[in-house]
Figure: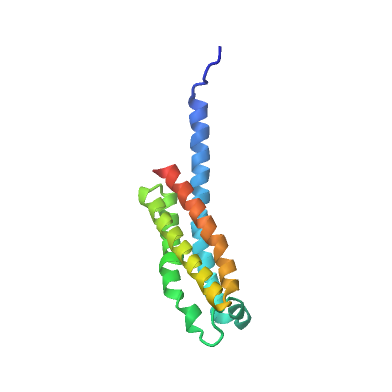
Length: 147
């Protein structure tokens, strides 16, 4: 006869510990993303060699710079708010994280088109693939954990 094990107190405590660790990792990811966004824009503004790698149009810096305000609002502030919401286990935290992930994916898809049509900006596209993918994974994971 096969029996299904029942969850005991220890199993619930172990699950709670795993959930707490996951919450901290998810919040930490979005906090790191906010800090990395600040670091990226400071580096682009201060180091011409870095700007050159990520420049979308060598003739007009405004093309790359046009991402700044959206990145501050969504990538930096949005990630910080998502982090705070997730770590405090607020239901809205994972919703904000999903919004941030959507913004990251939108920018990445835009860059796919830009690179396909102009042949420029591949460095920026390459940079955006990682945070876009991770943002979606972490946001969905946080949503599943805190819904």
